[in-house]
Each structure stands twice: as structure tokens, then as C-alpha cells.
Length: 263
Image (cartoon, rainbow, N blue to C red; front, side, top):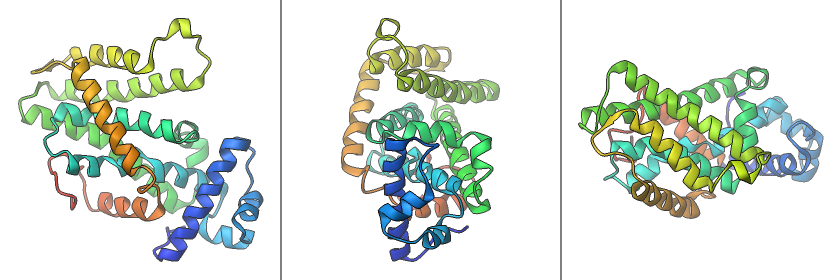
């Protein structure tokens, strides 16, 4: 099922997804029902099915409209002097910032990547989902490659690939432990400090011209927080998601080597 192109229909989709997100937060990701979405939105279930073929479409779309890749090109445009190392850190910090503002995003991020969920979505949603997931990996890959080209990092192709994998695995693991709320405080210190320490150790395994330090990490963390305060709600829409998907569809590489919004 293709995403709508008309403004009014996109706004209706936004309204449906807003309601679905609230239901997920109050009832859980398993229990919320299409019929309740329609009732809360004030539309028929028939209208709902015209926009979302099945429940899994709603889950995928909720993930897509909050995905960190919706925000990173704009941040780079506004901060053109970012080093490649800083660009490499953006997906990590942006993910944490999104989770701070959306109680459901961590659950959506964890559940939607399960093949038992995304494979049940309609073909168009699956296509968009794969595109967005791989654009996340491509962003990291391009950042590492840019660091090598700029002389910020010395690494073989295998080391570059392993660095991308390590950061992605690190992010998944740290999110799971902190967001589960199951871990006793005695095992974890402050989240920001803990994440920095482990991330800096991961990065230190590679030959960076300038090692990641807490001042750099804190500065970037502060800038991303300020950025999200201004832009999070404004970018949380079907129209923004669709615009980014169109750009990604026309590019085989990310926007990392450019600072222009047209990238």
C-alpha cells in the first residue's frame, strides 16, 4: 500500500499514527486494536484500511516517521563543520534523543526489526522499512569512509566494516539494557557517562587522529539535544518521512560528503 501524496490524506495519516502511538503507550504493542484507532480518530474502519492495510503497517510507519535518519541531514546542514567522527556519533545520540521524547520508540525499534513483524506488513511498507534500516547502516559506513578520506582515521576496509558493526551492536545493546528498566542501579552508572565510557573504548581500538574525549562527546550531545527541542515535533509527520524516502530512493550513498539540504 503506497503512502499518500495528498496533503489532507497525509494529515489524516498523521492523526491516525498519533492515536496509535498513544494506544501503544497505554495498552501495549500487542493489545491495541484497529477498531479502537478508528473510534478515537473518528473515522470508519473502512477508511482506516484504505490507508493502512494491516496492523503491521501502522507499526512500521510509526517507526519510519520517528527514525533518526529523518533528522540527520538537517542537522548536518545546520552544522556543516562537523568532523567525520562527529557524524559517526550522530545516529547514537539521535536515537537516545528520540527515545527521550517518544515512550514507544524503543519498543517500535525493537519489535519492528523482528521478521515476524515487518514481513507481515504490505509490500510498499516493507520496501520503505528496508530502505530506512539500510540508510542507517549506510550513514555510519559513509562517516567512516569520510573519516578515512579526510585523514581522521587510518583503517583497512575490514576494520572500517567492523567499526560500523561495533557501533551498531553497541547501540543495540546499550539501549536494551537501559530501556528495559530491569537492571539494578548498582550495575549501571549515569547513562550518558556509561555510554561515553564504553563508546570511547570501542573507538579507541581504531587509529583516530584525535581520540574521542568526553568534552567532544558532551558538546555534541548538548547540540543534538537543543536540535531535537526545536525540530522533533516538526519533523514527526508522514510528509517528512515521504520526502526523505524519495531522497533515499534517488541516492545509493548518504549525504555525508555534502552539507546541502538538496543532498
